Length: 265
Image 1 (cartoon, one colour):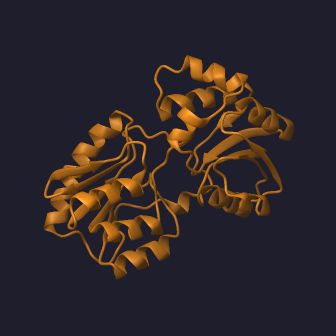
Image 2 (cartoon, helix red, strand yellow):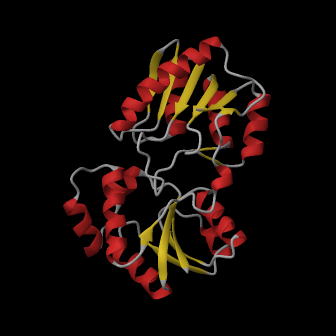
């Protein structure tokens, strides 16, 4: 069976390719011109570059390659999707049928288009199960009493926000919401919180209540810890089993150095 990869930005697509290689699986890559790192060509035997709105071209490429299952990996900026893309006829048809202009609706509609051509969009962590954390504290330091209280408060608020498909990240201090993620992404949300409150922040990043693991899976890594330290954040809470950790050992080592506690719930 041949797999296809719809590659966005960041390390995620490269991790999928490495996981597939270890499993002896061949992958055809549809690289998004506005997002994907050009280095992807060094890691995949077959790469086709498509514009962010060229759904028809991507599907034709997968059909030509005999792809039966596809994985979507790597971020595509929301502003790219909704304001900068020049859609082809197939993408335009998808956009016109959207019930609402959010990520879940768009990717769900794209998944339906793929399935109509016999291509199943599958769990983006299919080859990456070892990168999903188990419940518990991942760092040497456990959250202190203040941080635990902020985690509980943050989880309560974050679950409500996630139901609305707004963002996955909330930043809390003293059981007060400092910043909520919208389209800017986790790092910018944390930076904004740091500009408002200089220290003692807790970052809660969760999967949605019914997280579709085919897309928009929460991701953290070394840049998350670096941003938190700059912003004065001391604790990170993530969803166990549904959050991808990039460069796990390096991330935890840096968190320990910065006295940042990481807990998976």
